[in-house]
Length: 301
Image 1 (cartoon, rainbow, N blue to C red):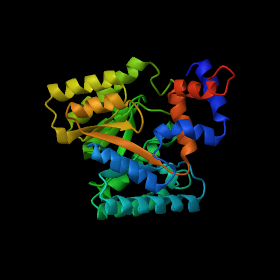
Image 2 (image 1 turned 45 degrees about the vertical axis):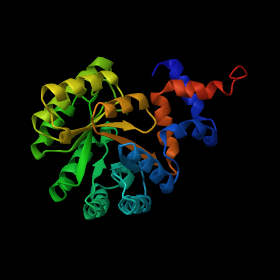
Image 3 (image 1 turned 90 degrees about the horizontal axis):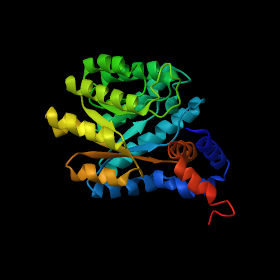
């Protein structure tokens, strides 16, 4: 992020949460489960599948992790009861990864057992690079017991990802591949846009080489176009991949992908801990932060 954008985002961060929410709600289904359900039903009615997520991460107390587990168990029950076309996405630090690996594993077992009961699926999200090894280990251990009900996320901007994919392809991993959002040093992460795109496509090719299922998570039209070519040239079956996007982002491109006959899944985040997620979206989209900021300047209106 350039210095001006950084200044704008940092300024917006100190605005009252009520003000930030007015702008950030474009990216958030709401603060409650009921609001998340309503958004998911609307997406389903348009032929779009969903990945629902109770927002939160980086807990430091076991009781907070257990509380989140209960939220996700309720979410899975609700998805089943409401017959929603949705799986769930989770962050390991939300379930105590930074407290204890074994404790975190135990919490995931509770969630995946419930998902298995409903023939549903749990996506383990990737977080910052300090957790990568632990998250991959967590996924592999859970895969041994729940091979049909768990998948992982990999981030194309990390130098290590190709090697990680080569390794995880051995067990036919179900992937979501994204560019990556965390701020990482250049020693371990690509910083140039074209390098990140090339890495994304290289990893996608490798996943298809070994017949893995892939969620192609991107809002970047050049990546979408290159993925289209791979799918067409290699005659990849439609049940071997899907495209994925965040709620409220690049909706025209989302519709185009649907119109082109590809499966689309949208990430539907909700919950009381929406603020941190919203700030991250603003960091990705400084133009939105500027729109918010200038509304408070004398010339803003």
